[in-house]
Image (cartoon, rainbow, N blue to C red; front, side, top):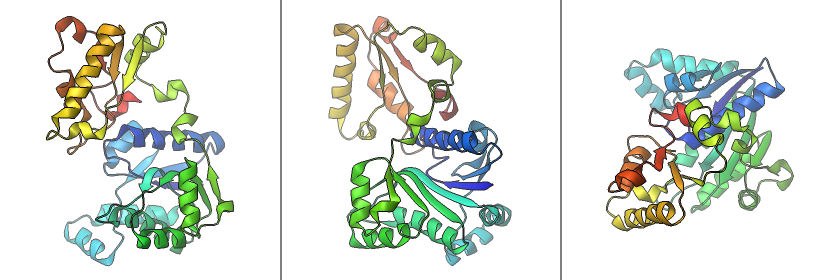
Length: 289
């Protein structure tokens, strides 16, 4: 069996990479001989961090996109990407927060719906797994979700609000299953592969260790109040509660770099207190999970 997976992969987001890992582990535990391919923003990195799968660039969803791909001499990559989905038996879209819009646009969400439409046109078994739905600001978004999701084979969402949103969009509630986030299916050893991290923090359970994943708003340098609040929290946790802090850099992309933001938050911490702060990984997304 050949399975193709579409999601927000190869974008420097550790949460999404953990979701992909959960899908891979789950599929291989049930179907040991399954052949898995993932569509990624950076296929080389995806193949490096996820063993025994192939990765491809996203293929164009429109005629104009195909023309641009040919002009940019991406013919081979484009053909390999499209050929892979033709050879696939099953298409999985998910997991994560893929189906939402903003007050300005629903372009992001429509791209994933196009993937489903193309897969259905090619008569693949399409399954939407481990996603959340919303927020949705446009009636057009709800109409499109209702039409497309009603045609897929299986839908699992990670919260009851997402199920309610799908039902409101016109999807039959009997084909929607509410299940925990895919990441919770991973064992601790699968989730935390770094030997250094395991040895230091998993074998010393008596320590007061707090893991911190920073909010996206921390990247907004025009709002210094976020930094001030985080620095106050860091000082209180170290001085008053005698905690060790581990920062988890979930996002490492050109637009949102958690490592840069974490360094900004910890700047000015005293030398002794600095010893109680560490970053789960500074070598890239493959080590943290």
